[in-house]
Length: 353
Ligand SMILES: [Zn+2]
Image (cartoon, rainbow, N blue to C red):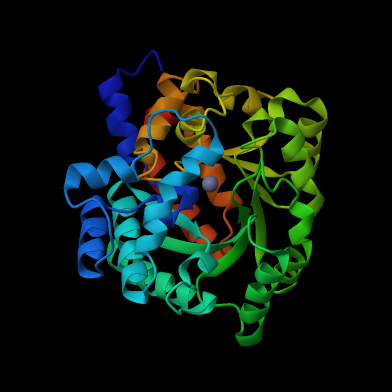
């Protein structure tokens, strides 16, 4: 990093083709779109840009994960019809492409968007329709992850996965996820049946873990055999957990800004990215939420170098690793790898610390 000043670093990470594996649709609404949807659907919400923004963007630091989740209440209220879902998905893919994110896995919980009569599957189809149209236009790739809520009854999550099974896996959907208030619903085992059914349908499995309860929760989540874990930075404090992650090759999709906001780490600088890398744990860098955390992937990449001690060549390796850990098919993976490497071949800073 000493060779690069902040401006050069910023330009470099901005231009870098990037892959993002941990990104929530409902945490990534454009303020303008939120205002428009609230107005046209007559939903009670702030009426000015500034007031809406202050509701959609969470404070720099709150007490815990449960408090951070409050920032999702209004977005979910606004995302109850197919047109709104399509539009918000298209906005996000466009915004990510603008930040040179060339591959994004977008996740959200379909069952939170059925208040006005959409089925879970119709929700998935609407998000895919918006995503894929925007992705084609922006020459980027997008895949979807359906989140099962920890707070929903296991039978509801199972019924949702069964409904997907009935008519075949929807286009674009590559995985299921488990997320939601972890302190109140700490046990992933409750949702084992839904998760196993999804796996048997060829879907990949990821779970949120360790936003509460530290390394013990990360270790606990391994009981449902996720290929990747969303978050889990405190795994580093538990040698047994580190050993299990390394041995099984489980990936942690990390989000330093979001975890600082949720007070999972006391400061951004305390985020143990470098230590996890040094311990041999597979990791990727992500934003979690474009709007709730008010951060782009370029800013997260820049922070990893300027505040977390990652070198530029290490950052490039993290970026390339995300393609390898992505839940896309191998043909797409190969294409992304080739295009990323072709870009990187012209940038000497990526190879010499
Ligand atoms: Zn997340």
